[in-house]
Length: 325
Image 1: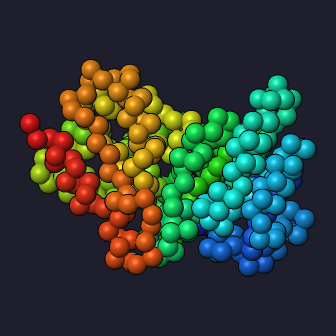
Image 2: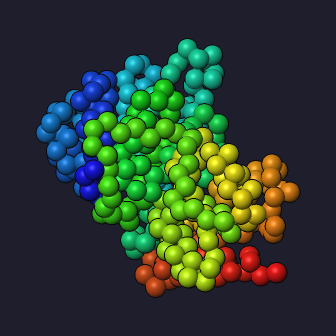
Image 3: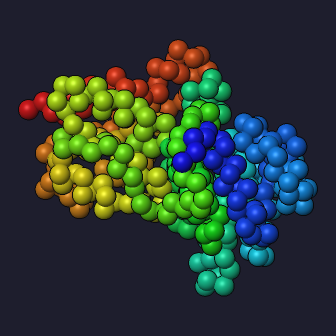
C-alpha cells in the first residue's frame, strides 16, 4: 500500500477515471492551471486539456447548470464547488433538477453528475466558508451523499460516485486534505452504503463522519484506559445509509452516541437516532446522545471556533454520562 494524502487520493481518483472513460469531464473555479483552491488537482489540466478540464466563471449556478446539462446528454461530469457553503446558491438546480430528473422522466434520463465540495471548520474561514452541509442534501430524494474520512475512502468512494448513474454530492473536509493514510495499489473501489467499523467495542456505539472519526477514535482510546470499550463506526455514505451495521452494533452495546460537526437541529445524527429508536428501541439501555456544534454559526475567532467544534473531551464526557446508572 502507498501512503498518500487525502488531496492526492482525490486527484488519483479523478485521474484514473478520466483515463478510463473519455466521457468523464471536470470543471469548476480555478481547477485548471491553478490546480484548485486547495491544490487538489494540479496537473490534470495539462494532462487532459482545456476541453475536459475547464475553468468556469465565479458562478455556482453556471457550474451546476452546465454539469446537469452535460450529464443528461451523455457525459459524466465532475464539478467542483470551491466551498460546500456555496451550494446554497444553487440548491434549486441540485434539489429540483438534478435530483428529480431521473424519476420525472420515468428513468429515460440518467444524471451521472458528481458534485465535489470542501466543507467543515477548523481552518479559520469564518461563518460562510466553514459549515458542514450534509443534511441539506440528505433531505432531498434522488441524491446520493458521500462523506469520506480518510484517503482510501476518498479514492474508492469518488470512483464509485463518478461511475454512478445518479447525482452524487461528494463532500471533502478541507482540514483533512493534508492528512495521510494507506491506500491500496491498483483498482480500489468503495461501494456506497457500506459502513466501516473503525474500532470494535462492547459498551457504546459511536457513529462519526469525516474529521469527527479521528475525534471519536482519540476519545475511544482514552476511554479504554478506564475500561470503557467504544465501537466506532464511520458510515462513509449518509445516502445510502448502512443502518444495518449501526443497529447491529447497538444490539451489542445497548448505547448510541453520535459525533457531528454540525448544528444540533436537524442533524444526520437525529436521523440515525430516530431510525435506531424505531427499529431497535428494546436494545437501548438509555437515551441516544448527540455531540454537536456548541453553536449554529462558526465564529472567525480561532479560540471560539475551537470551542464550538466537538472535541475529544466532549465525547469522553458524553460517553461517561451515558454509563452512569
